[in-house]
Image (spheres, rainbow, N blue to C red):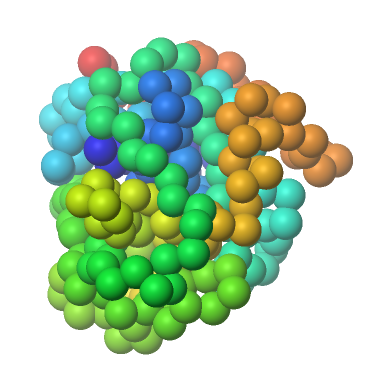
Length: 238
């Protein structure tokens, strides 16, 4: 049910592309971390598959049309403040399983948490990984993961869902924020239970954004035109 979101930012000082994990909440609505769009978004697309390689064609599920970031998220802050959440609208139905968000109190629920996300390697490829048996510290708005991630607990999986088996169904309880660039800090995740109004309003597009933020993707839906802005090679062919 997870997929990769490939973002071409407006501000390229952080890199020409940003890669995040996302999960579908409704057929044309996904959730990821707001930090994925910290440099703005000119164009973004959703790619599927257990492995994403830019030397091979990967199925494209859709193109992002609008992004609603949580108004409490601080784009310049280096640490997640519990609001690193973004609702993403796409141009067509996502052909993936839908995950139900869980916004109740799970502190007394005895269940295993697991986190899913794409982790990069040195060959411009990303592999979907699953971390089982997580034991995060639960704060008011966030889950804090290990300070020293193991091999099966990737750190750079911003946007990756944190799931819990509740009533034998996988339920989304939090969304991962990013770890640090040296991969020595496991990062944390924003809990959904305190952001119910944001989730509902952003899904219905009645969410009021901060001044200077735009929900509409600035580059429209033309990938090749977005790439021309960077003077880079043309888009992948699908």
